[in-house]
Amino acid sequence: MSWEAITRALQNGDPSELSDRALAAAHGCSEGLVARARRTLRLPGYRPGKRSCPQTLRQAFMERSREVAGGHREWRAQTTESGVPVLSWRGLHVTAGRVAFKLDTGRDAEGNVKATCTYPHCVAPGHQADRPMREALRAELPAEAAA
Image 1 (tube, helix red, strand yellow):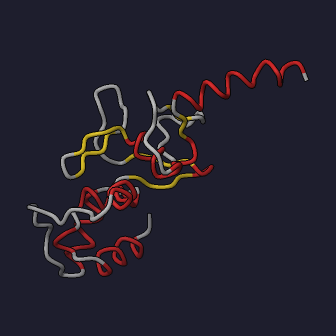
Image 2 (cartoon, rainbow, N blue to C red; image 1 turned 90 degrees about the vertical axis):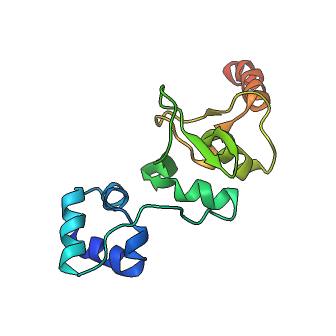
Image 3 (cartoon, rainbow, N blue to C red; image 1 turned 120 degrees about the vertical axis):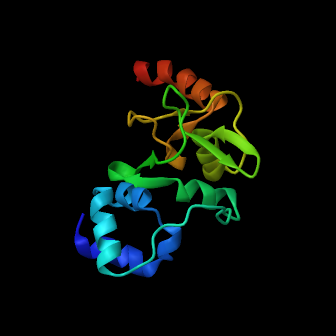
């Protein structure tokens, strides 16, 4: 990531709300580079503390994930020990896949939600299927194989 992109991010946001770690992760660089940019621009350091909560579930989801190549979405927040992306927001604790499913379909998932692509732990809204969707796909497979 370029020096210009990091300094632009620091100047466009509230530098006291942006941690060096979060900026480094978002821009694919070292925390040291972000710290040097902050010092060069004479900007205040990050102040940990209570942050404003995203107003909607969609905002919370989007803030904790990012789009990657191929239309996939990568989770950049809390995960379980096995790496399953988890979203905690206003007392709700749910897998990011379940949230992505609801954002895409407008309904709650039935049963487990699984990604329909091979990207590891993809949370792209259009890449999620619940149990009824997977069952419907399995029911179609024999007919397609015969064609």
